[in-house]
Each structure stands twice: as C-alpha cells, then as structure tokens.
Length: 265
Length: 265
Image 1 (tube, one colour):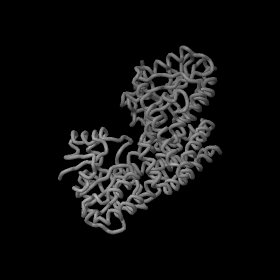
Image 2 (cartoon, rainbow over the protein chains, first blue to last red):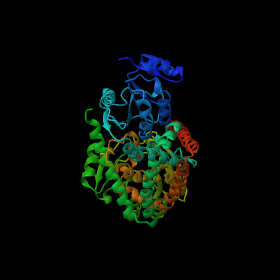
Image 3 (tube, rainbow over the protein chains, first blue to last red):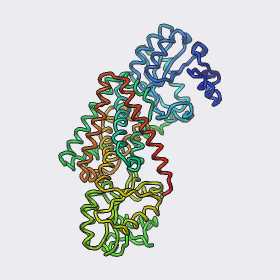
Image 4 (cartoon, one colour):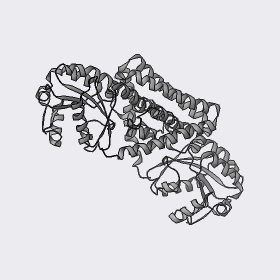
C-alpha cells in the first residue's frame, strides 16, 4: 500500500513526508486524487463538501471516498450524488476520537485504538465500499457502527456539539473576575477543554447541524431550568435528587463506555 | 508532630491508621479535639458549620481550627464567633485541588502540590493563626491566597460551582438516546467529570452559596443566550467570533494558570 498526501501548504506536505506519514505528497490535488483507490478527506465539514463537489471529476472511477467530519447528513447528501455520477462511492465516517489540538504536531498513531467510528452510507447500499471503509478503520484499531446520517447528527448534537456551546459560554463567566486564575483548577480545565478547539471548524459544524444543535440546546435549557428552579426555591432535597440522578447516570455510562471500549475491534 | 484523626465510622479510623495517615484515631471527637493544637475539619460545608458550632466547647483553648470547604462566607460567619468565645481561632481554607472521588481509597499525598489554597480569616486580624494555617498548606506544597470570604464565594460560584449545575444538566441530554455510549468520547467524559461528585456535598455548597450561584447562572445564561441567537439567526461569523474569543481567553488562562502553578510555593 502506498499512502499519498495532499495539503494546501507545502510545509505540511514536507512535514508529513519527514514524519513518514505519507509516501508521496503534493499541494495539487490533481497529483493525488486520480491515483487513489481510497481517499480520506480530513478538513472541516463545510470544506469537505466544497472539496468533494469541486473535485468530483478528479477522483478515480471505481474508487471510494470517505471523510472524518462530525456531521454526516449534509455531507452524504451533497457529496454522494456528485461522486456517484463519476462512478465513485462515498461513505461518510465520523471517528469519535481526537482532541482540541489541530495539525501534524499533535498527530498520534494510537488515536483510533479502541475508538468508535460512525459510518454512514448514502441511500444506495454499497456493500463493497462499506467493507473497504470499515477495513480502513479496523486497521487502526477502531470499531465501526453503521448509522443513518440523520440519526447520527441528532445523536452527536446532544453528546458533543451542544457541549461546545456550553463550554464557550462558561469561559467568559469563569475568567471575567480578577484572581480567576487562582480560583480555577482541574475542574475548570476539563470542563472548558473543548472550548480550545478550532473556531473555524466548529462554526461549520454548527452551520451544517443547526436544527439538531438548537433542539439539543432546548433540551439542555429544560434540564438547567428545572435545576435552577429548585435552587431558587431552596428545594434542596430536589437539588440533591437531580444531582444524584446525573451522577448515577454518568457512573453507569462510564462503566458501559469503558467496557465497550475494551471490546476488541 | 502527632496526627490525630476523628471519623464517624470505625472502619475509616482503622483504614487511616493502616495507611499511616494518622498516629491515633477515634470515633469520639472528645478523644481528639481537646488534644489538637491545629484542627482541620474535612466534611461537607453545612456539616462543617454544624460540627464546629456543636463541638465549640471541646476544642483546646488557644488552638486553631480550619476547614477545606468550597464556600467560606457562612462558615467563617457562623463558626468564627462560636469558637472565639472559647479562645479558639478559626481561619477558613479552600484548597483548589481534589477530584470527583471521595474517601480514603482516593487519597493522594501529592494532591496539594502546586495547588492554590484560598484562606479567609474572620473579621479580627489573626496574624498568628493565619501564619499557622499558611504554614500547614505550605508544608504540603500549596500556595496560599488570603481573600475576603464574600469575595471568595462570588469568585468560585463562577469558576466552579455553576459548572457543576451545567455538567449535571448536560448528562441526561447526552445520555437519553440509544447508542449514546458509542457517541460519547473524551469530550463528554471530561465535560461531565464533575457531575460524578458527591450529590450530598454539592447540595450543601449550593445551599450555602445560593445567591452567588444564581448570579453566576444569570451570567452564564446571558452568554449562552447570545450564542444561541447567533446560531438561530445563522450569523455564522458572529458564532465564530464568539468561539474565537472563548478559545483565546482559555488559551491565555492555560498559560497563566500553568505559569502560576509552577511558581514555587
């Protein structure tokens, strides 16, 4: 297997070659896309759509394309038909792994070990293409879950996207006052970690998953409103009951999640 | 120096003796409090007040008492005068360290290394008592910041207490749907970590810091409302600008916080 790399900046291509992440690289997609049996597009979600549609005629007929974006509906809907006309199959991927850090300097060869990857085929069942993409993720240690793109987007709006808004709103509240740096510790660091993610990347996620993120925000505000009312009324037992429900749900999740992650891929 | 330990449950006293955490221990405060030059009360905040006031006559005259609670105003106001009548000095402490895990099984001898401890004397300047309490924290590697109790409570409501409500509200939103366990990763784990803290302990913190927590919640809802409006209107550049403001504020904080923590105590 030969790994080809495309990036906009020549420094990135050189760095990837030096790291041994790619065998050959170019800043011109025409040097790379026509030669690839399997292409993984790793750029922000709106850029993924734009790139896929613009270069549709450049991919090798019969080849397979996937991505790593945090939303799947709009990507599968818009790239799928554009590539299908060329005889190229698109299968969407969303690996549940990564961090708030971007760029090759934060590359980690073990990033996908024991991770889950959501895989969303388009409307046509594409068994061979799906198997290839699953094989790719299995080869780096991940487990695949096939899920309808719209269901995926509704789910991750609630488990991930909405948290980013909450962390971004909590940062100015926490840091506005003098001496905040002394009054923050591991709790603040972990709660706000995701707020260090790329604003350009997250803006595109919110743009392409607007409806579900707003629905997730409604659900969150409903939960927070109930907690707030107990607090305002001094209903302390009700406050404790709600905290206990959240604690036990999280502890149960932590056990399931760890058990799940330790299942061999 | 001899370390005496009091706990309600005999198993806890035995475990502390076995671990070498204490030299002598008892489940009866009368065996311990009259013999201590410096007492550290480590129980939830409302229980701290109740314990301090109830046992006021048991402490050694001339001795010093401190605590580790996350609120300082009500503790200093209520214990201070009760102990002063006995000639005992109370200085409030709040170490910015710890985790969501409770009990001796999670004890860590390095917990306070490079941590900040907020120290709140009462209304009387108590130079000797303050020096003793600062010496205690310095001896385990922490740095002390003296702060007025009311200022402290307003500050930590925003850097810490309000985050606990947000995490508790985010847990049911994230976990309600099927397949949530597959759709959660390090982001969800870190964002909700504090929601695994003791509900009984947090209930008391909210009870004793109700006003400031509600004010912090107002500030949070104002920030979240602004983000939500941009999202609902499709004002994507404004969304990105707000995310960028949060990201750069957090990155600045992270540098200051790490720089701060590495200052020798």
